[in-house]
Length: 445
Image (cartoon, rainbow, N blue to C red; front, top):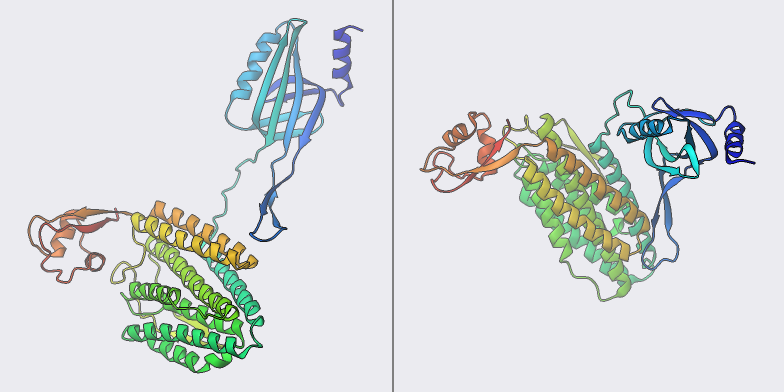
């Protein structure tokens, strides 16, 4: 049997005709045609654990492999035409005798010519399914997603702290050491809120946290409730305060993180593990709230949002916080105002969350590990998006001593944001800004 007969048998054996085309260029499908697919699998392996977790990130795009030929006296011209179609960067329609009409993207192609098989050009083609963008993609609310992940993370932390408590709740000496540690944590928070009590909105929080001080002996027996109260308290920090006080509350959270980080642990191993659990819970809660606040600040700057009534739940009681804040960009000075702020905060908080990720991994808090990593990645993604929409900042150095209003107007042609300019540069005497000292100006336009 000649090679032509064998080739023709292969062509005519393909149902229904063996004919196909790509981008309108026809060819004959011969030999076999392969289709493959699968799932994008991420494997999580944890220290000290022999088994891991497999996470399905979704299906992979179906891939098709087609073996086809071009036949005829003008096979070289047909070859160039098909190669030109395959080199086009955009997806196109593939007509296939088995699979019908498909919208595909070319991945690879290979052309073979042989001196033993004249008037034939053989091709091995690989395609992946593409999508036609016939409608706009929905935009995910990053702030809402981060808020949901924050709540999920805090629930996981509370469960892990409760598990740690179960290992010591029958030893009086361990319980006493843990109660003392938890009391010191609440005392530190109380001292911080007392320092902020002159700012509007913190009077209600001060009374609430003082109530926690008296109930710490009972709350420690229900660690989930204790951690829930503390995390809800932190959520009230960045939502409280009169206009201009938000940076103070964010610095207060930083102060709590430092004080709790430096608190000594018990010499009793079981008590020390429980104390370490409480410390990790407080630090992660404060960091996650700072991350939420940074993303919210960036969104406020971009959209110019106005705050509404804020409330938090402490010990099953709803506490209404008097924010007293007016329209942003007038008297308030958020944590994130510029592209540079966004990048700096993302680096700082991203690194700190990564450190806590390692710490909870060492404690085998498997549920917390996954949620903390997811929150960190979402936070970094949202800060990256916000950075693209935020203005730049630049340094301006006045030649002589002059009013801040004059410097701002000369640099930007607009002086309406003078309060923001004064607060950002911490100008104690805005009427007399010393010459030769650089100040930062935000280029909103």
